[in-house]
Length: 158
Image 1 (tube, rainbow, N blue to C red):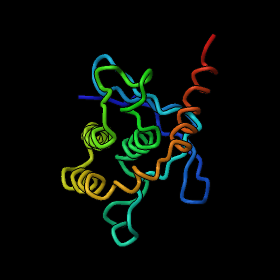
Image 2: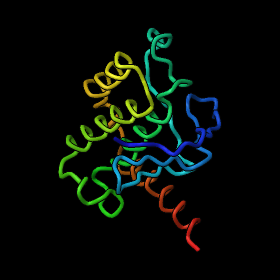
Image 3: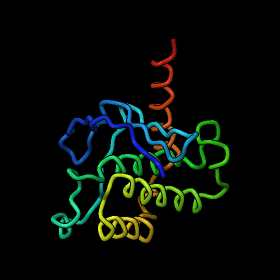
Image 4: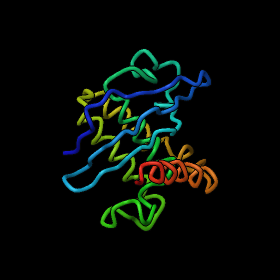
């Protein structure tokens, strides 16, 4: 089972439905790998219709870190990112990369203690209806998000 660093999620509200990550967010999907969502990444947390906002809020609960992680996985098409994604997690197709991203969201919500009903409601929603969000991540968007990661690595280098 995976884990997140214990740090509080540090964000800035950009007042347009998006939030800026102010500190790196680290997720450990297993004992040997780490996925870092870098400082400077923009997230919208959950894209939920307002009619269910009372049941599944956009932001402000135990699943917030998993939402940021999922936005990162979609925004970078992470499981197709050779050289960053661990080689044993790389997949050949876009559809499999999306499925892996959705599965990692489910796993991360479980790690964070998101309740069963809410966890599976979110998971099935993105699995069934997240295709448009995945497809809108053009090469320009994906490369811009990947550049944030590369710049963050360069800042950390001695």
